[in-house]
Length: 113
Image 1 (cartoon, rainbow, N blue to C red):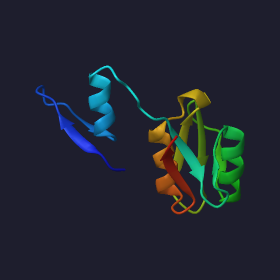
Image 2 (cartoon, rainbow, N blue to C red):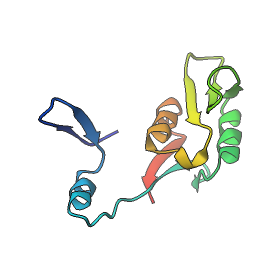
Image 3 (cartoon, rainbow, N blue to C red):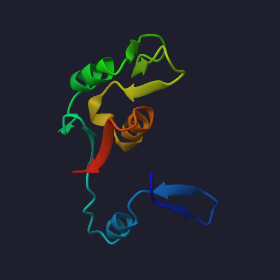
Image 4 (tube, rainbow, N blue to C red):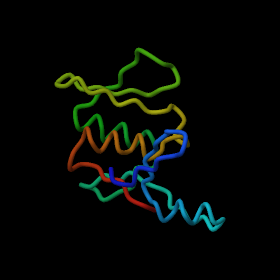
């Protein structure tokens, strides 16, 4: 992940992925781009959990059914990694996308739409 750390006067910090978009947003001219998860071998945008689950299954990930009922979770027997995603695909954002990218190097990429 890249970006700029913004420090507020009250001591709170946050990572801004696209500082130019933040400036535009504060000026009322928001042109923020939506992020998408791309499966690199197929060069396809992941557009549903069905397609994502199929790709993850092919990579050795299995559904993990214990835990929070509001999450979809996947794990690999060969590692301690766990991928947790919101059950509602409309809440699938860049934070979850980057988690998948980190745990599956050279298979996924996050791009601006």
